[in-house]
Length: 197
Ligand SMILES: NC(=O)c1ccc[n+]([C@@H]2O[C@H](COP(=O)([O-])OP(=O)(O)OC[C@H]3O[C@@H](n4cnc5c(N)ncnc54)[C@H](OP(=O)(O)O)[C@@H]3O)[C@@H](O)[C@H]2O)c1
Image 1 (cartoon, helix red, strand yellow):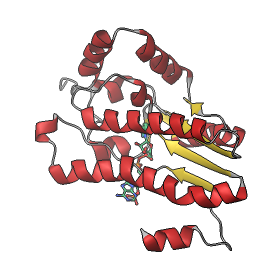
Image 2 (image 1 turned 180 degrees about the vertical axis):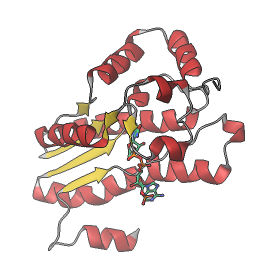
Image 3 (image 1 turned 30 degrees about the horizontal axis):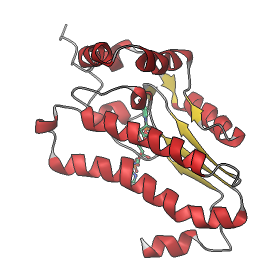
Image 4 (image 1 turned 90 degrees about the vertical axis):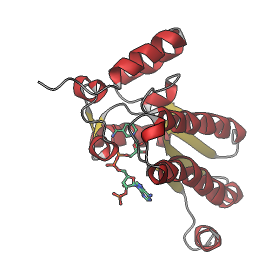
């Protein structure tokens, strides 16, 4: 961390934009998830994202400018994700951290944007083992390019929140408005594997 701190605070190459994109998901009931994979997921989704933001802030504050883009997810708006509970919770953390930090940095010249995509065509679904869930089988997917372009524009405008795509906006809003018990049942249904044909 110290080496990283020295590199990141170098005056010749100051970090003007930090994009916390790296992340992973682990599918399955918590008691069955490999402990190593779970720890790795929390280290990358939560700890690395927070630590990197902490490391670049002093330089950005000194220069009175900077942009941070954090990859949350539309699932971060959900009250919980049965069979993916830790992943959903990690993305709620990203959303909460980004909102709090954006307010903390108001007037400093530094913006924080939480980008919350829904299902997107990347290696994520295969790596996380969610390709066979009803959620990923039924949802239309955006391309990574569409998500990246929308997120980039939001970051450059200094928007604190960005949910790309109409369907994802609707899902985020519905999760805020519907009773939690109903949303949890819907998520439990969506996060099961679809029956084999
Ligand atoms: N795809 C979706 O449906 C979706 C939906 C909502 C949010 N997201 C979020 O979007 C972000 C990008 O994911 P993606 O969809 O592009 O998935 P991806 O294709 O699996 O890419 C994940 C990225 O994270 C990096 N990464 C993973 N573990 C790492 C580690 N321990 N150390 C350093 N880098 C690591 C990977 O690097 P390597 O390739 O070198 O391993 C890769 O660049 C993630 O935060 C994910 O949670 C994805």
